[in-house]
Length: 114
Ligand SMILES: [Zn+2]
Image 1 (cartoon, rainbow, N blue to C red):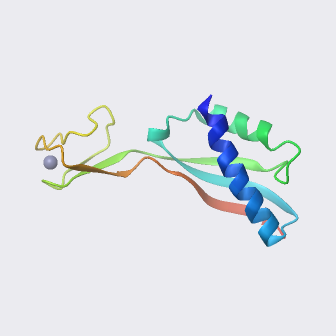
Image 2: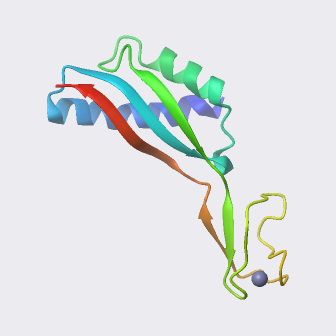
């Protein structure tokens, strides 16, 4: 369950913010999670809820915004989102491609009590 190690990193970051800002509670956390992370949302939520017990974040709600994969071809400028095509441009066959999005594991927003 790699979701557990992912939420631990997020919880550590939030705990630092909580201490630094002297909030009295974190009510909800919205995360942007890229499809390349291969996270199963309900497992992520379960891991989050289990991991915040007894921490400063206890009681916080987790909201997940899924971010689809998007590739960009540097040769022809083509874009595509199917991960099974991967690092080969379906338009021109070039291997010179960038992943624009899909690896996110970012805190998008927080609802806190000051
Ligand atoms: Zn191309």
